Image (cartoon, rainbow, N blue to C red; front, side, top):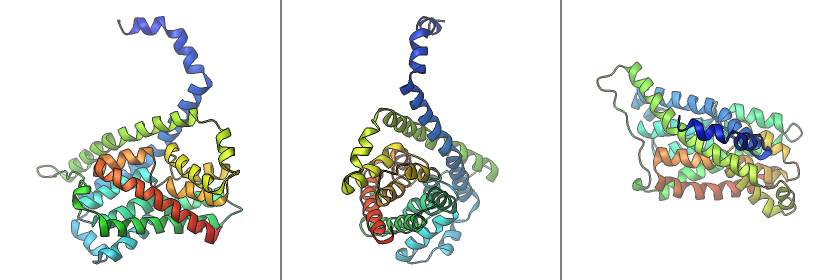
Length: 306
């Protein structure tokens, strides 16, 4: 009763606030990000639970090359088979690490899967019907970054920088109970960070003046950096980002390629999910290097192919 009275007394201001264009825009973006990402997050959680409960650890030893240097590109190319976005790749990569896959290979998979899977490439082709090379450029640049980050982690990464995802024991439980227990745990854990990222993206989308984008597009360097940063801030699902990039026609194709390469690899919600899965220390090191390499790969690939 004490809670309802203030709400009733303030219903006029609350109603006006909710009806304001800025609030409506905020809610639209927030709901769009969550609705786009949630099905694929659930898909990733289901795949993660299947890997953790039903797939024997020896499978991964047989599936990937013994050499870590060769396992990285093999895992990067394996990203083609996951029909989901970046929200799905994080829990799957965590499950791979739990099952004994070398972290360098798991991280290559984490970065490549959201950008080179068939659904994303098909969406890119549909969004850029007059620029078919954009599909090849996105595939090449994204795979290049994924392999480079995997090899870089293999060379310079330290075990203490990456917190192994918690291993959930199935002792004393049937596989069915263990599977659904893993699903509930990961949905609650990763879903919270998805909501926080969606809230941040909606807030930024609502407050950034559109005129700023037109000013930034006039400078080649600024335009690439602007769309790279925008990809991080907007946190758009990789299966929808091609249509957003296509709508930014005032920017060059290379700048829009940077948007498509950076977004699936590091954005606000991804940073939170990576921190939750592998530790904050890992995310603080991994995200900035990924961001820089993604921009460089997009510029290089765009210069050659676009």
